[in-house]
Length: 538
Image 1 (cartoon, rainbow, N blue to C red):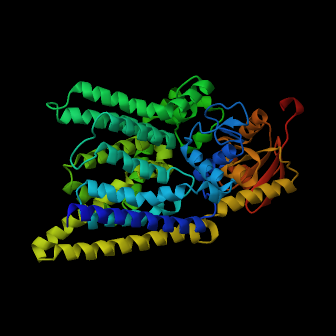
Image 2: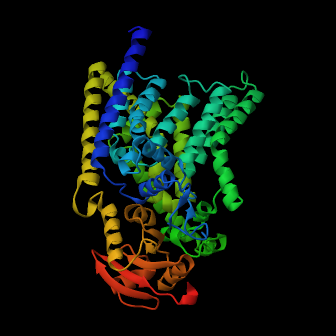
Image 3: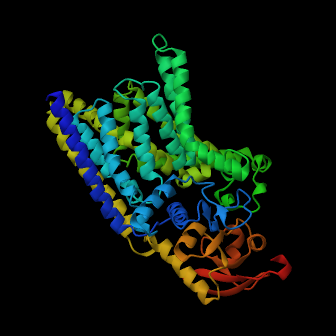
């Protein structure tokens, strides 16, 4: 096949992958009608505030880590703003702030994932069929399928992560050309940081990639050229991140919002919602003991490795990913990618073990997913080449048969996972959280709440987005802690569900009037209380 014919064929394949990706994700949009969990609810709520002209401010508090003064509170001080910004773009196009509108721009982003994956496979030197298979595996994305069109960071991270590798390694076996590529690389890292707080790692990754050229080939690469490249990467990064850093400086007199850094001192996940937050410090962390820290990080490591097996590797793909990585181990793109995976695993296990094990690594690792899918056909080649040498197989025919079979298996697994997560009824129903929050809002009105009242609830972003009430999160503590929060933030009602923190388990199990809390009733497992404070406490 001539180079021109192969190029034309690849362009046609990329177009087909994009169009099929769009169709698949349109079906997902049709079937997934609500955000489903707190992260997506948060970004959606943030986009609603932007659309309504309220700027980067939110009518709820979902943690107290930055010692908030009250409501409204500066938004995106823990989670980053880019998913909400993209969501509001869709709302502006549609002219409304509905959930489908929030996802309009995520549909083409999700459609690009297969394209990016195929391009990485071809960049690694794989054939046309192998790149097509890799792109197809990205379309049948397993656990990620329901999440890619949500107002979230998944599709952003996959596309930006893939673009990062394609920019860093513009040709097979070669590093990026300086300095324009470095500017682009730094800009991609800036976009990744605007998508997720751990995106900062990718800026350090861009610096490492630039240094790599000098370390590998010092004879032909002047160090001054590398320094220019690092400066250009920093310029690209700061062009995007400088406005956000300036906002943090204006709000907190520091580059990073203080809430995220406090999570380093957690000794259990529920302390994310501790009040007051100054109890989280180095002394309290050390007092918890090294035995607890080691055990929790070992538990996080197990959880994150299971995520690698089940989510990133979809079980059946992991052996092929590893075999493909081994066969292409001399490719700088591959081992730099695995170093990035290891750095992500290390941060989400050692530094942030609680958030990492509860979805942080699932989110962060999505940036590597296009590379993993691209390695699968290379791994399949290794097994088929071995069978050819031992059994006399026709390698080309076997590659097509087994590749197509593998794709069908992944489609079936993805369909099963999607059905279980989204289409199932009962307690696993995707819409349960949204419907529950709407019902809580309706019940609060029946109990006398007005639209001006602030409610203490388990999930403020989701509750506020679904009900319209302002809210603050139930703190990690007991009844007295709830009353402290109510006094500080002028909250009037408490809605306590079965996810009550340890200090409120007794009140949930035996609901009754206690000092400062008047029991109003129970509906669908939620206990409702009126918060009664003395006039001088309000």
